[in-house]
Amino acid sequence: MNNDVVYIQLDRKRELRFGHKALKQLVALTGKSLEEIESSGFDDLDYVEKFVYCGLLKDARDNNETLKLEQMEDLLDQAPTYVHIVKQIQAAFAAAFGSRPEGNQTPGEPESEPHTTGTKASE
Image 1: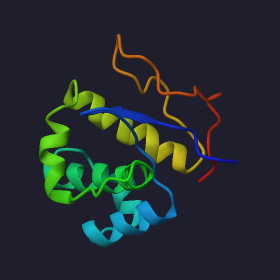
Image 2: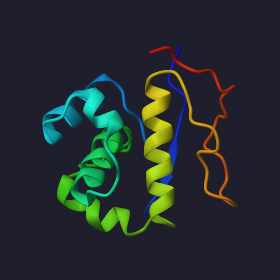
Image 3: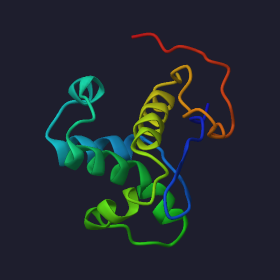
């Protein structure tokens, strides 16, 4: 089935999706394997920019935009909080592999649409 849709609020509500093409691009940009990417933290801000950039490429194509990595710093500054960015990255990455982390929304923040049933992917 299709991945669950995860949105991130930046300059506008954008779909954050890690399909095959985005994951391949992320591996190339970071020089890390998918396993290393999954276990990495979010204290490297350049890494976070690359992560979100790759996840937004489909949204940009769907909206006839040309998104560049250099734009990410300004786009991420428009997020409501840094926690929002991290939680939406985690939710989109988990959705790409068929699962969603519990409680991926910041308190008071609307849930990403549509809501999943909480199925866990096997490793």
